[in-house]
Image (cartoon, rainbow, N blue to C red; front, side, top):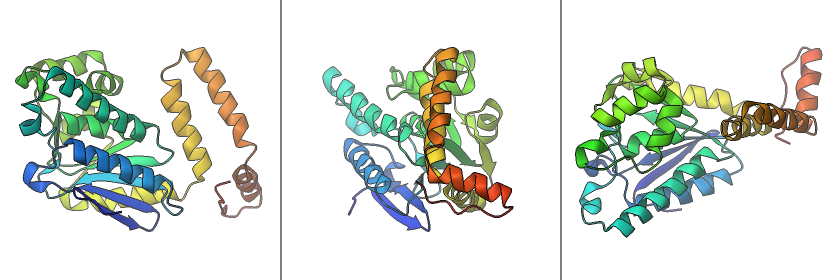
Length: 260
């Protein structure tokens, strides 16, 4: 597919999706959101793609937020519609059968931070900064920030970040659990590719079931979640990969995964 605001490249089993609006610091507008949804949907059907990486073009921003020049003119109905459109994309990322990694190469603010939080894993460059500064515009996060941020960093810390609108450094984001790893700027993409390839080498049915167990189980009470996990655990025993993995273990050889 041809995109106006994205660059898509497949490197072995990893698809790199780069938001390519550098003059706008990769800010998200409706067209970019529609393209992201289409790209992710297409890559999910690609037989060789096992992991998707999201990043931003240039060395300043992952995604600096929403396109404020557009939002300034919104009516209440338009603002709500935009929030629902973007929220649908972020849930698509959360529920994708593929692992989605955010490679945060610069500013991830407002909608950019919310996009990163919708991903399964977040790797950041040392110079990256993250935050939810919507309070400084007289609004609140509208793309899931009030819900995902507390789940990642805790309720009080999330409230403080949103009440003050202050940005946090990559190292601080690592300390509070907002990102998973921090690397030098020139090493971010190589480390992201290495991690993505490691995940891509694993049996993908089990990867998908882990993602489902975590994603759906977090919304259940613990007892129901444990039973749900048991159901998915049992489902693993219908797969060829389970038989291959256990046979390989006892035969002291590397497993050959078939993803079935």
